[in-house]
Amino acid sequence: MQPVGAEPQPEIPPTMKLLFAITASALLGHVSFLSSDLLEGRATPSRGLAIAAEYIAAHFRAAGLQPLMQGAEPDPAAARNVIAVLRGSDPKLRDTWVMLSAHYDHVGVKPDCAGDCIFNGANDNASGVAAVLAIAAELAARKPAPKRSVIFVLFYGEELGLDGSKFYVRHPAVPLESTVAMINLEQLGRTDDARGPQLRRAALTGLSFSEVGSIMRRAAALHGVEIYDPPDTATYFERSDNFPLAEAGVPAHTLVVAPDFPDYHAVGDDWKKLDYANMAVVTRAVAAGVMAIANGTMAPKLTPPAEPPEVSGPESDSSPAIRSPSQPPPSVRRQRRSAAARTGTRISGRSAPARAKIRRQAVSP
Image 1 (cartoon, rainbow, N blue to C red):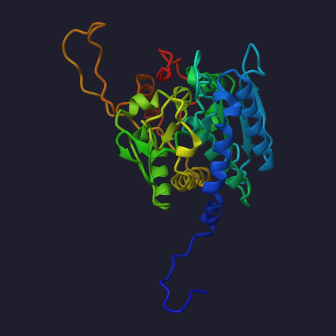
Image 2 (tube, rainbow, N blue to C red):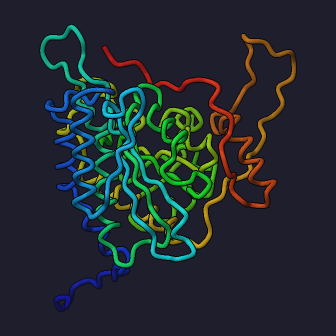
């Protein structure tokens, strides 16, 4: 009951109430451990990465989910994707999947160094891992479960060139053709971006490349969070673990709060610098978006691309074809044209491998 004279408060829909269980303190707990000096920067492979994998698996178990360790050759124990699945509740939709992911590796320890030598990787990407763990616990506690099944994947080796997500595409835990969407999380905790403070807003790379973008926008708006398409969206689209899944035909995007924060790949990426209150708001918005996709009767489609204008004159290696920053990579454009030709059905199977190995920026000195 509200006190006499109090301003009426809006009723929270029952389906949204549990989202407030995603708290700043829970996120801080995950990030502060994963980015502690004990884990020595979580390089792939390393002792710290193995500890992080076991930490993630333990929290999946605590949420009632059974973790799967997906190891890579030649030493499966050295580098592993950590996976958990939440089976859907709808008999007609439970064999389709929504993926929520983040990479849990970072770049290790600075060689030949005195003083602070550990790249702790709090924002990049302990923050993304913390959000996945919080959302997994949130969705696992819901009764009934979402209609579609949800697969949670924490990738190794992103910093080496998207190694974990590429391995997953070659060895999918669930069928790629039944994976209706992927939301990959990166750098959710810092708000001090080079373009200015990023409060209650997040970029979704390649927002216009599929219907996932519009679904996420609507769901996030209920939590007062703005989802926008970042400048140079195609460049960002190719630089994270969504890209191998997009190459395989899955509507896949990365959500990031501060794409260009000051301590990127620097020893100053420390857990004390994150804005956990803002991170909790964004994480709730992501959870709402995942639920909207998982409970939707229609799977998100790839959207037909707008073709870039023809470039006249001879082409040479020194004068490559021009692509607008808002245009997707050529392989993704081919897939979207194919999807349109199939009257709205998603692509089954995989495209040709990426033409170039995508690597992140070099470690700061």
